Length: 358
Image 1 (tube, rainbow, N blue to C red):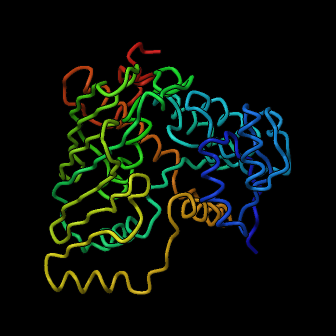
Image 2 (image 1 turned 90 degrees about the vertical axis):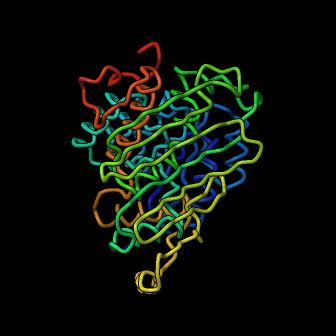
């Protein structure tokens, strides 16, 4: 019999979206039992909106609660590491927003802690969840698409000075990065979800849009392990907002939806090279069951994994690969050199990708 898990959402900014898009549509699978936030007004607003009576400001108080199964961490990035480690040590399952932590050293620490923990950790990468992205994944894994050639991943968003009028945004020590870390990270994960691991990166970063510490423009060239090439561009100075992934394979060209925050949604443009490929695609997608979009799909998949006793649908190793790419891009932008992946403990930015090395 399927179990209904009790969740405490920690951080009611993006946490509100987790509730509205993830837990409410899966109300038979999850109950949001408690909220935690340091802002009383936000805590009250989200609690009232979703009928959550239990509202606390003390994260540590949730750790000893036997009635809480999952801690969903949606706090500013610099707080993630300590909260994840405490939650795992307390035997809780953990959901955590991006970036998971602030360095490869820290993510390796988290991975090691998981080996001793009863609970499971699921990083958030919600762009994978949508019928467009998942149908493309099925076509590729069925061998229909063939040899991958090249593609583009684009994050063209707009953030103004008002967005950065905030005590933690735009600062290395608290946001841990700029457009690369906070905005483009999801579509970069989607690109590797479909194309596989990155082998080499060359990149440039710049701060051109806002008066902030971190970058708000990025241009990067990726060489994938399978030999494909991808160009990744991001800016926070676009007049309109678009996220786009376009991938060219031997037999199929895929183009995502362009919606800024949900490019995984269907339908995608899927262009077969010939009638036989079109027939094979039709057969592969016959009887397709919707997977659920964004947080709805990811939370549903997490529940299935918990019930089955298997690994989460997105793992800490996925988060490590994402942060490894981030580290390589910052290293290339800082040195002007091509950077080979994977990156180990001997890499100069293993302990921190921030410019001051802290």
